[in-house]
Length: 226
Image (cartoon, rainbow, N blue to C red):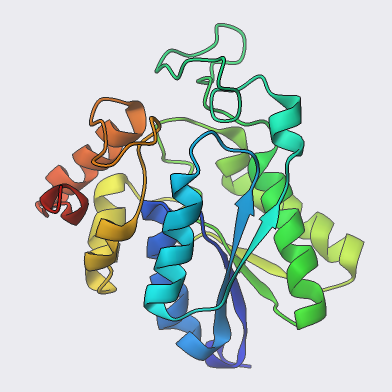
């Protein structure tokens, strides 16, 4: 079976990385074999859900948005709890920023696998990267390898998790987007932790994105249109 004979489901958040992965999946598997899944997990900024829907419609891939409100009920992090201010400081005990949502990517990929199973989709594509500044443990390669094995055992399937950005720097991610013809689509994405457009430019996510585009020598179209 060749790549063009397989079906892929991209976890699409509406951000820079997942949008790049969507273009990567289309290049590898073909537009007709790619779909997207987005999760409404009670995130404080709804704009990313709107961006994900817009991106999928513009590119022409089917997309579904599934509600998962448990994360908001759990709280304790700055992305779901509006009482917690977003900061760049890390917790003294966990060494993680307060934007870490415990278990988020594990849950996303588990639900994605469950969605994919009856539809005979055998590849899940996620934009996580262990080279990212945050160091989220559920973005690491060993986490995905372990999760893939658990999903295969638990669903008796051959599901495969692919993370094309896993070992790329933000500069390299921008260069990949360029090579895939996805730079224009970056204008449709949302990255800012403060949930504003034009982006605030000062939160950790904005700074990381800006550094990646600057090091790649490419103008960020999201800023160009602001």
